[in-house]
Image 1 (cartoon, rainbow, N blue to C red):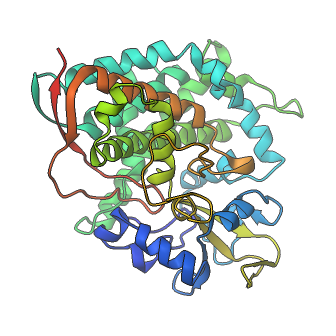
Image 2: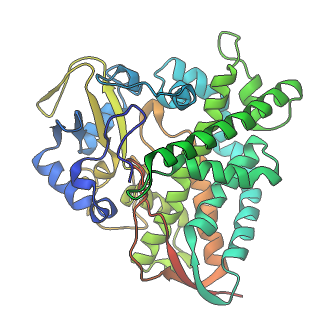
Length: 410
């Protein structure tokens, strides 16, 4: 499991390094909320923040808490230029530059803009489920067969990637989000990462040039032709970084949201209820709270600040634990219970403030369609008896594989 962020600093604390701890970190979160709601970890040179009100305050204050990792003491620039492209995207830019970059693609992810896309998402989901649940009953691996390819296919459709190239898209995305395993040679892993980055960069550069010469009705054309506030357009490097961000960030979130939803609904025996009057969308919001696909976010203090009596100095890095905030008893009644019809539900599963997840409406729509079509395809479904492995990631929460047993409804 990878435990370092792009700035070269360790993210995961020692308490969450084991398989069991990262699968179920919630008891540790509870202990920290009570005993050390803000604590400094000298091994990681990082502050950890666990309570809802503090996490929300930090996410809401761009001036005091920056997303730019370069502002952190001890930041290490990537060795290769292409590895630093992500830092030029909106993900690591503060206002006003963040707002300019986000404005390039923002309207493509508005709920109204996604309405026309829903039939296509449903078509993709039906096709994938038809292959994944081919027999009348049996077992299938949900992540590889359904939860992962669905968002990859959707973002490829949005960007205007030809259908025949989507397998390459998936392979690159798989490689970019994977982490090195304990038994793998580091240089082999690094070389595979570099090869995927170079292949993808070459592919996107060709697409960028093509769309500038021959614009089409797709998101890639929008990225490379839309003007910023000053009349300029994104550079090739910025356009490439934006494409990588959309590909990787969107896939990670939605894949784990779908997977975590199936895990939650199976653990709490809710599939029959969801086939009835229960709201799938409301239940998905509870998944976002209960098993948030993104458990934590990173910030850097730009000036001295005090939180829960602790003084955070300028240049200090903070990890705000969304997964802990979403289980905070001070904010949510019966916080450790999965309540599928919980309302209101002001979770922080997609973050908060300026950097609230751009793709949240799309992720919600994809997850809703995925669960609805899964329910329509099956008469019974449940997680198979297996030893789950957490995703090899430092901030993203999910499982690498989720075998499910099923009986089809046909």
